[in-house]
Length: 433
Image (tube, rainbow, N blue to C red; front, side, top):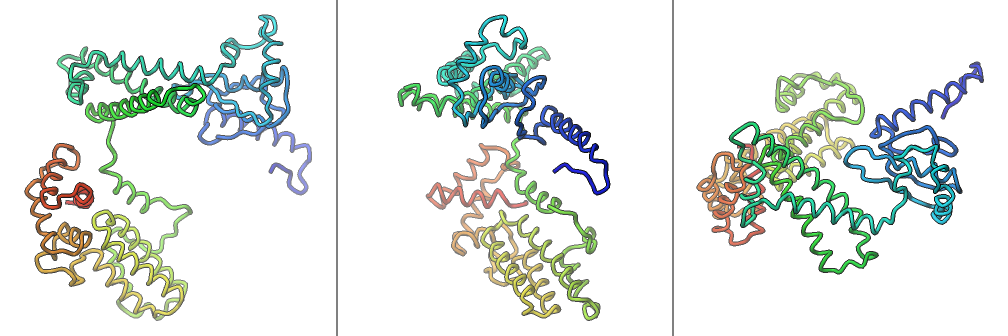
């Protein structure tokens, strides 16, 4: 809310309003990510050009010239992600709009408008979305006409130059061809998003709907395959766990308060440091809680970081941690005892085998321990899966589909079940080594 402070000149409110409006308009045009919604009553109908503005919500009675001017605000193209503007009409004004268009349809009436505003002003969305989708689909089909038979993955990758080129000129041509593919597929997806909900209104047969959906899916998968094979795209899937760990570790909602420095020693070292000596006897309840919360937060982060490696085990550890937190908050556990329990938990997080729950043939191997914990605690099955994994694993398998399939084939020989193979492989892929 804009206002004046006690004793401040009331006349200054006008300047404040002016500055506020100026900054709001600037952000809406130049920083749309920071100003996604702008609500106005009698403003910005003229002299305001915001190409990123895509949606206009009408919840006010308007007519004739004013209605026409308002709708022109979304009629400017921005980048390749904006094909046209959308009008959400809460007041059912489109009947009045047709009258307005008829009234202002002469060259004289449009003399005061930019050509971009009035060219093809209103169109039938069902007809236009259908034509646009089919045009883009035809352009993609034409682009891929040169792919050699049998037109499968290797042929498409060769056609788009994923294995490189002999000359700089060829590389430029391949790059332009891939860029056109990416741009057309993006446009196809946007056009399909508009057309698909209107296929029923357009009386598109079900067989055609299925065909269009399949073509969109095909070109999406082709774009991803070509992008990754050529190196144009980076497949972030292998990095997702580490990215999640970084987010959980370093990003917080509020300002952080440094309680201690953990950079140079482990969580176990920190707990040992707080457990030794008699300093806890001179700590206030608040200071003890601060230390406990530091341990809890770092233990939780470690559990998140390692969870994918052994979901069953680290879920159990999460339950233990949650119980300790509840006991601390309820005041039912003494501080020194709490530190002892945290130390035991930290040791087990670092090395699950200290729990003594694994057979001798399993303990000490994180891979075996993960297989044992997550697939029935069956020692014989665990050893068979581990042997199959070691016998089929090749360097760099996490980033190579052919090498992954080799591992899955070896696992299938043991499990005889595709779903179980995928579950086991997910655990194996998450291992750090």
